Image 1 (tube, rainbow, N blue to C red):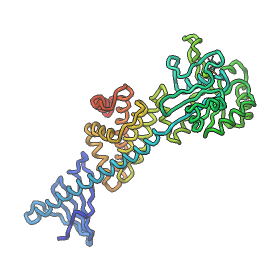
Image 2 (image 1 turned 135 degrees about the vertical axis):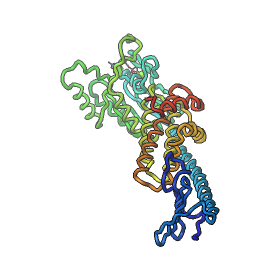
Image 3 (image 1 turned 180 degrees about the vertical axis):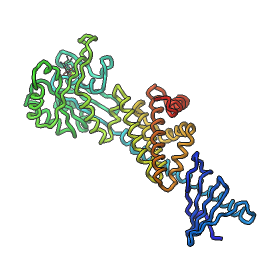
Image 4 (image 1 turned 120 degrees about the horizontal axis):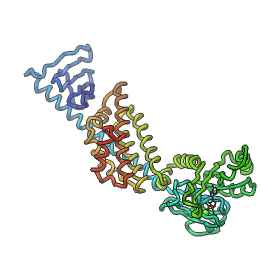
Length: 430
Ligand SMILES: Nc1nc2c(ncn2[C@@H]2O[C@H](COP(=O)(O)OP(=O)(O)OP(=O)(O)O)[C@@H](O)[C@H]2O)c(=O)[nH]1
Ligand SMILES: [Mg+2]
């Protein structure tokens, strides 16, 4: 009888329905290439010899084999238990590593400077950029010139600041601790211009360019050109591009925030989405997108973005070795991001891991499948099934987290989470 020990390579050869490891085939290969194929369901063991390829069925109930093979099956399960424990450690480490990455982003600061002549529409742009309506404006808008007296600092939280000022020179002259720090760390500069092209604005542009990594030029009040025939607006834009020597100008309209305008006149917002998208793309590359997203009035779009990118990522990760680790790390990162988006606070990895059983308990088959699929040698069918399972389970999990958070509840309200999860994962939520 060839020796088989705990150290021999063991894997789950076949995945049983409904993903129960006790009903799956187990294969143990020893150093001489012999294989023991254990079928716990039918209580049978086949012994395949490495040198001849011959396969002998072993009768587990025969008295002479009984103890040996039953011991072996038990040992096989012990080995699996050990593996699971090891995997859990790797699992938690992977999630913590992801968390560290994300936390670094949350520790960053974000400074945006909005520079432009008096009354050119800076304050209106800030409101439109942050998707505000008239009743929850961030920045005060007014017809009289200089409504924003010189420099206005909007401290959205202790890491995110917007500065609204006629020019960087004014900010420098301010000489307060806040503005001094700000000017050293401007991430995004927005130069707002309006009306016909004016070459004298180039100095403001150059000054801003020297102080920050990316400058976006906005041509505001484009509704002024609505009454003109032909391509008046296009001509103005081209001229601005020429004077400022830039490739892109963002034409916008942000009309309607002025409190003196009748409440019945709707806001006329144009071109701001394009500007916001490009600013966000720039911030995303620097891991700063969420810092700003959480101050937007409509968070749904950002939540959806977080959910969709996690769903896409797990679809790919389902084909990787040790997939369960990556999938859970991605799910956890998305939960942490959603939490930050709504609450502006960090959720610890321990808090996220404590949430996972809420979902696992309700979907034993799918979660266990993903977990054990990690140990199975890759096969096309299993890969595809794993990808589909991973994507649907992740989508449903994050959608229920999103429902709870957007309702203003917290994630320790496990009851609410469970109800949403049950509704969404059973398909009734869509
Ligand atoms: N027609 C038109 N008017 C606008 C637009 N955006 C802003 N305004 C008006 O322009 C005036 C000045 O707008 P603000 O947003 O206060 O401009 P600002 O640059 O912050 O002005 P100060 O703080 O005074 O320097 C207000 O009466 C706004 O209603 C626009 O797109 N079109
Ligand atoms: Mg203003």
